[in-house]
Image (cartoon, rainbow, N blue to C red):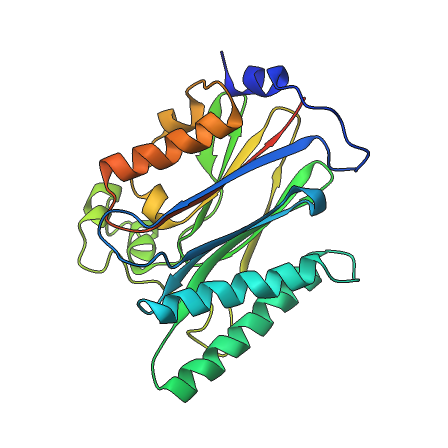
Length: 252
């Protein structure tokens, strides 16, 4: 059974809201090495909005950075303005300003990678900075729809490094864009189809570094089971970092 067929099989009473054809599951785990989970997520199917943030800076610094990003987005989601690109981007820029100012006062860096998804009809609008990723699964095929903002990805894009070499490169964890590292935040945006039967995964690098296409396309009993399996596989294969995911699916 394909993922699309599984989504077709799920049953839940239809709510009156416009977004009742969307279901989502979120998971987060500290991993087996780190003491603190610096990841944060936001899952709001009622507003057609989701986000994952991966804090950097160690312990409290990373937690504050990721929490600041998610809090700013939550305020935007619950605000009075229609939730469009400008509102999402403004929230992320506000979070960036807060983090940059806080880093100056503390004389130390704290930042966060971010990836967000906002539903707009039959599309999802993805914003991101850093190496937190978005994947789309459609008709049994999966592909990553974001491009990591990292040193090794730039080397891969230039043809100077293979994907296998990138995994063991000494700068594998060096990010070129993130919230809180520069007064001028650079976001990248892409629109992807989000059709009945499709699924989209947002995740931190603690999950994506060991993710396989088979993980995303193998059949499962439910969306909750799929989310559990994705997290379990990441922890079993690696577990050296915090791992967080939001799995979003649209019913047929």
